[in-house]
Image 1: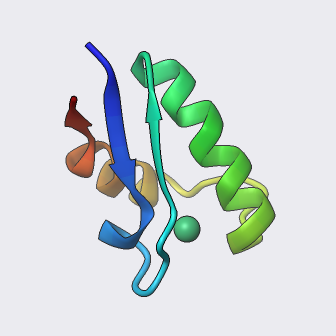
Image 2: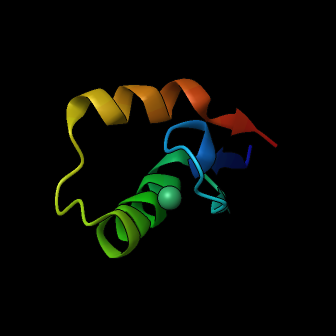
Length: 58
Ligand SMILES: [Zn+2]
């Protein structure tokens, strides 16, 4: 099942969202976005937990 994540659910005001075929690919895309846009070279555990709780099946 494909997975979807909207960055605005975790970061206020961010309009970026992503869909991927599985959670692994989703996290890859999220970490690229976090690095490029939010200047997080590594994503803190706390954020990963928040992200996980907001992932939806599509
Ligand atoms: Zn974002």
